[in-house]
Length: 318
Length: 273
Ligand SMILES: Cc1ncc(C[n+]2csc(CCOP(=O)(O)OP(=O)(O)O)c2C)c(N)n1
Ligand SMILES: [Mg+2]
Image 1 (tube, rainbow over the protein chains, first blue to last red):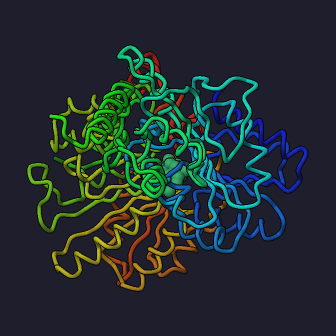
Image 2 (cartoon, rainbow over the protein chains, first blue to last red; image 1 turned 30 degrees about the horizontal axis):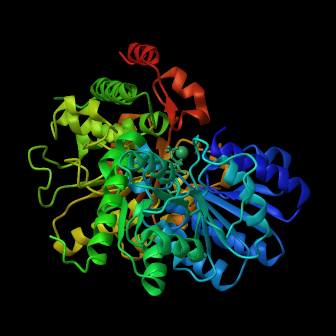
């Protein structure tokens, strides 16, 4: 099932039980799967048209009235377009609004550079009180929805809207503030998010063939970061690689670097968009163009391990 | 060449064929919103605008901002036909590495005057360009095309207010009033109300015409230049989303970003020949 289908089905299920939930779209309800909700909930599911700023502050008003609004758009328009409305009407005023952006990073594919959010995580992470979450697959999305609603405060849901390969098992236990250790390993930590998790798992297999045991962590919640899990892992492995579908500035690499540098500095290497804008293409092509690949993660893991080893030998190795 | 009705009819059919073909090569694209603006773009680029395909950055040229940037392929078809770049390039539309991305990009495409794709912004850019032309006193005319759904963006009305405050009589804008956006008919999603009255009250010189009648478009542009009395001009174009290809028109609200098969491309090309 497509992620947007799961998202809408969960909303439907919870709107049935919880009359506080409201869904507001800005002319991308078809794209985000939320259009169908209007038939069943004509009062609580509506569209304000192509007016994202208005949508964000309308949601804040509704939240002040006791509702829990979900607002949806594409990632760039749900974040950078409206970051002042999110910062002031929603976060600063402490209103319980859930912000849903779809097509993160290069997954905007044929919509091209204007629609590719390379900065949304940086923006949202820097807004006080914001929780920032990116599910890795449909199972995680489904399990996260009740916790997102239960959490009293703004949440940014970064949603890949099409089909995702399954990463987690049906009986997996989800905790919004706990990163998932998907595979244990002792030589290098790979912290990945979103579409990069499957690449990280592929990289792990490649590394295994080279005699390297990588620990793969799915960092679904970028803020608050589960630094405990990440630090425990780097204490064991001694080096870390981050992999994200976002600019290397402001997102996962930055969050991990902050946590590691302050607590247990180890060599860090990163895979992500190298501070450039996106462009049109299919997902597979764009992964190659921007280096968001398993091969690149594996190469960076080798680099991180080499840096660790050279540190341990006091840099005396030739 | 005499720019009469027959000329415009033939030219805009040709542009529609190129547009459907390049989107068809890819198999999906913004067919509806491209086809609805072909007629106004045809009149502007073949009978009105002072541009030079050999010198796309010519100083003092007239400029066009396609604020509804998703109609890029219609503009690219015209720019290719006029010789800004080879027609063969049209088949690279929206493929990795192309100079013709789905939304207009001034850094990639010769002849594109402003980057657009985040709705609302292009229109303010057009206001800035018009102010620039006033400062330089180069007598250029700045054209802008916005969508009716796009008109729901607050930024459109910020730009509208300021353009009239600055008496930008060198700015001629068009609303592609095709009555549809993605999620439904504009009137059902967020009604624009009396659109002409809104623009008039914002201080603009407003005309409303059939957006597929080339001579009416030409006449309205001439009138906008002659009779504006120091005001920016808004020409509201009553249009049909998907105009010119029956099955695309009939798809209605589903023609926004629509898949198209090679068979359907052939059907469309026949209807347009
Ligand atoms: C700021 C922003 N929000 C949302 C979108 C996604 N989007 C692209 S086209 C469109 C609908 C535009 O409707 P309209 O202006 O009527 O265009 P037309 O009917 O001419 O295609 C939307 C919502 C966008 N490109 N930019
Ligand atoms: Mg429209």
